[in-house]
Length: 112
Length: 111
Image 1 (spheres, rainbow over the protein chains, first blue to last red):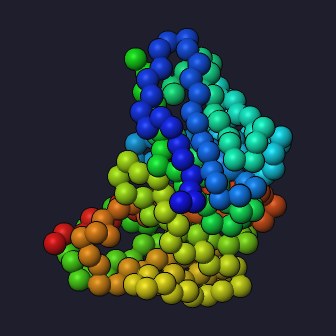
Image 2 (cartoon, each protein chain N blue to C red; image 1 turned 90 degrees about the vertical axis):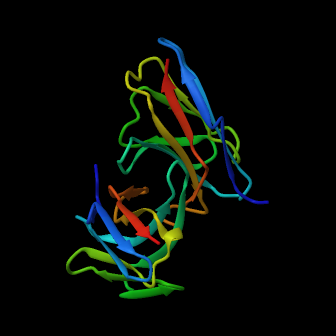
Image 3 (tube, rainbow over the protein chains, first blue to last red; image 1 turned 30 degrees about the vertical axis):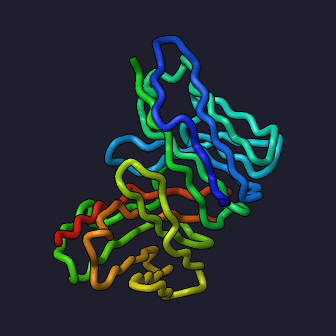
């Protein structure tokens, strides 16, 4: 089954802690994205990557970091510098820029 | 920055009725896409319409694009309770390499 997998589904962060959200795809897509969604809101772009070993900041990159060491994987780290991390995080991929996105099922991050 | 703005923010209809959602955007685009999101889930792609297209159909979905007015509409015909979800437009603007999403329309279809 081809698709995009996010884990975990729920994640809790303690004060001052870094946490990492996993995103894996087996669609052989070059482009991958991380979005943040707050309740009742649209999606805001955090980071994106169009090719392995390269990534760019989106509109709200502060307090987040990513890596793209493999085509299949694009993990997102929410650092302690992100003061309001509670949100629903969505990972997506596309065959190339501007084409339709395939989304994972999301990770709900909450602060303890 | 929000490129697309959907209207209305929320829509409630009865099964069998048609639902129309609108999306306005600010800058020139390569294409515009519509997505659906069930509560607490990821988004699912519905339709992509390119800037040189005016109308596109997929099953009960009809999308129009008016580049002169910088607007698009999504029509769902003969709605069903299972169509209850949030619907988002997303634009692939010129001179950018990312999709920008609107704020969404929450559709409730009552049986």
